[in-house]
Image (cartoon, rainbow, N blue to C red; front, side):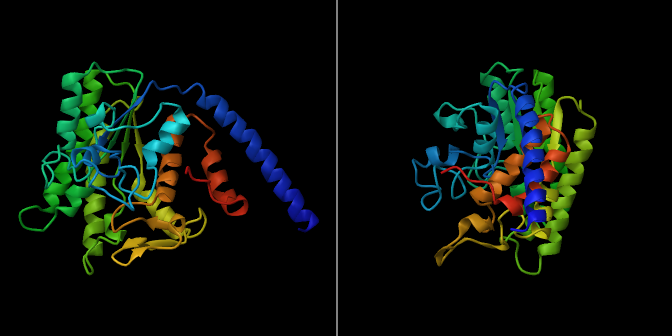
Length: 311
């Protein structure tokens, strides 16, 4: 290593260490009693798995998650010291169901996000110290067929998703994190030739979600922009250790050799490596760290290596 490179690297380490120390100091003041989650397979940590008695999702999916390991809520729970995110069917606080839609039942009868919220409120006293998360919409977009389910229906689903946050605020929730949908048109699941249509539907959902959230108390509601995060990852291939942002790791042929370098685990769901990046972005919205920290970590990630994933 050259002398100049050594000095610049040493300065970067010192700066990052100082800023990180401040971040962790402030993290200790951002205490949540628990995380209570609503949504679909991007958040489900075992409801479908419990319902099917461990037959769906099965190996090589891991721990009842629709991924090859921990999902973003697991990582976020670790960072916030709120404990394990277990499924509501087994007594936990995660009400998300794989296959769920915003306001109508899923294809296999999964409770909609509206039903999930109603079920929680009907059997629990709202915890004002909890962090509530809402991530829904992907299955609404996938339900589009242009005839019986149109772009207008997708737009209505976006507004309905914002309505979930309003329902929780009315009930007494004080901290709500809403995540918009990633670009479903960029995922391997998008039918060939329909990618741009699915991308526009994703944008339609997100636009209406943002419109609905704009009228809510911004001291309570925060938005995590998964769409933009996905675009940034795809535009900076390799910067966070992900070298394949187009293909599914898990196919009919088996599992790829390097899943931690893939954005997509299967045709729709992120790998645990990608979930870790989502968790980092989510954490930044609820912990008052310096705005430069996420950008610094992103810039230095190529120099110091990708984040070590939980085993």
